[in-house]
Length: 383
Image (cartoon, rainbow, N blue to C red):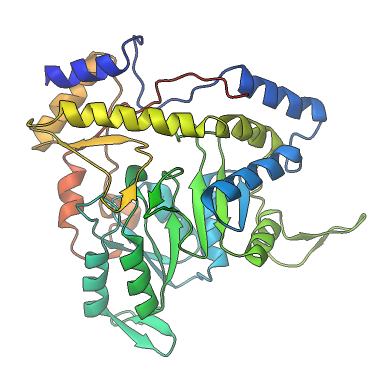
């Protein structure tokens, strides 16, 4: 275990306290935020919102990107825009952050859990197909559950730690069963599946810019929209569905107050300039971990062969829960912040009774997986 601590200290040699993932900021971020303050546009309108949306749209390759207050709201709006309604079933993975499932629950829909793939640890297409063959049927244009008779409306794959799921196979399967794909791409800005950015395979998808993400707006998210008209609608419903008028308050549908403030977008614009530098640094860090862990008891989680990952969080799989706990405790004593993976969703009280398939790999990983420090090591001024 000492070699693992030595490896982490070697990567972050100039730090006394090593965080799991922290943002790097300099004068560039300060200058942008000050400009936003001086403009007096600090809330839900301002030039930096438009600029940030345009930059993310151009980088990912979608027609429109719509900034929101956080990744959770981006995912909630994406599901609503995709037609998910109360009483529907939405399939997702049990190995995910709780926000993915909370959104489904708060829409009045029901999460259904399938296992993850050993390749990349995202939603397993094989597990999904196995479940659908046993428990689903097509009723006209609707995919329905054989037992509950509920409509299976959408599938939400989450690109775990930035590693893309097998999107080609998932797309083919969901087309066969007439199920909508809504990607939870919260962790995968800068990750590509066969050269195409994650979050661009479904009609709507969600990114996150939380403080621990590869770039941050403090708190923030983004809806990625495949079509121009969808982007217009997404912006409309996330700004309380208010129709333009010189002075009247006219709202034509039940919208959300989900818009990102201009202050946060200014921070995002400054951070976005550094994205390519961060990606380069994070790949270098992942390569150091991979080399150091060859022929050890720890299995490093690598990007799938079909993808190029942002390596948002590096991860290892330990031989046992006891081994995992020993690593965590040793790291914390050395002021190195690591973390176990999230509790599998079906272990949590609010999702304990949710429908689910075989979750054996999820349960195995839930007791053995650790995230290692993954902050970019470089500080750059990209003005």
